[in-house]
Amino acid sequence: MRIASLLRVLLGLKHTRVLGFKFTETELVVAVKPAKRSSFCSGCGGRAPRYDRRIRRWRHLDICGLFVELEYETWRVDCAACGVTTEMVPWADAGSGFTRPFEDLVAFLAQRTDKTTVSTMMDVAWKTVGRIVERVVARRGRQDRLADLKNIGIDELSYRRHHEYITIVTDHDGGRVVWAAPGKDADTVHAFFDALGPERTAKIETITIDMSKAYKTAIAEAAPHARVVFDRFHVQRLAHDALDKVRREQVRELVGTDDARAVKNTRFALQKNPWNCTQTDHEKLADVQKTNRPLYRAYLLKETLASILDRRQVNVARDRLTEWIGWAARSRLAPFQKVARTIKEHAEGILAYVATGLSNGRAEGMNGKVRTITRRAFGFHGPWSLIALIFLCCSGIVVPLPHRCPNLTL
Image (cartoon, rainbow, N blue to C red; front, side, top):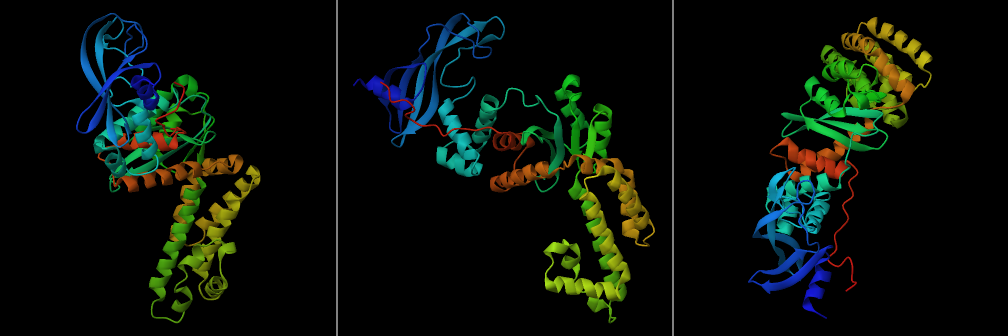
């Protein structure tokens, strides 16, 4: 067997000819060339005339513990569309110093572990891992991530010690991230709709958001036809927070009295769903019912709101929600009176949840996955490296584990 044939199989590269090789102290350098005789522009892929050349090297997958580099004397081409640039090579992307199998392995590892481990294992710089991830996302991601969107969720995510935010748009139907950008204001949402375009914006049917005024305003301006659904978690959280405020007020008022015992250590019993309560929790709630009417009223308001959101008949839910708003407004509990005003203002978006059953749960789940990415990376210096990793891990990109011998046919 010829050495050149063996190396061609070990490299596992298509449309590539092996011309020779040489060893240095730390690496194996393999001389290669494209199988095609003509030169093509690395920018647009069109045929282009060539006029001079220089030697370049690309890092490839290691073989037997040796660094492997491909060496080729690339042509400079004069493309009518792109101008003066370098020719396209079949083993690497334009502007990259690594072969595609090497970059795929880096991306495969980056989907599963932190960038420091990847950079140490692959012996590349920490920042290089981020640049490789961006190229793999551009190469393996969907050509148009914003195509065929109907039901989407918009949510923000904090990173870098909660001083910076990025806005993430999730496709409810596909279960994938389709867009992300720095910021969490109305301008950020407008940037998404600008990228989407008026024709595709018109096809959006439902948008789930939290109760952010900035998001609501931007959607009303850019997609007034879309149904806005307020996330159930954020609606119920208003009642849970109000209940906790009432409990703390009662603790302060009753400190030093006999009735304080009924309120003591009731926080978690009050916040739990009834079917999750233990016998001890039920006993605590019974004591609250007997001794502290304001706190038990707050508890009933919280549970009643949850039962309204569990309904599936919109008209019935509308009547019950109207009754609940009136009850909360007359409850003489300031925290719930404030919640009543908020829910009255956002009633249509809350009822839209009852009608559609959609919530920001998928977007929140994606945020949980992204937070895992940020924790294992120990932070990011800027948003775009984080966004590239989000697309790599959360947009449905599948990076196959590259093998050194994908084809043993000699």
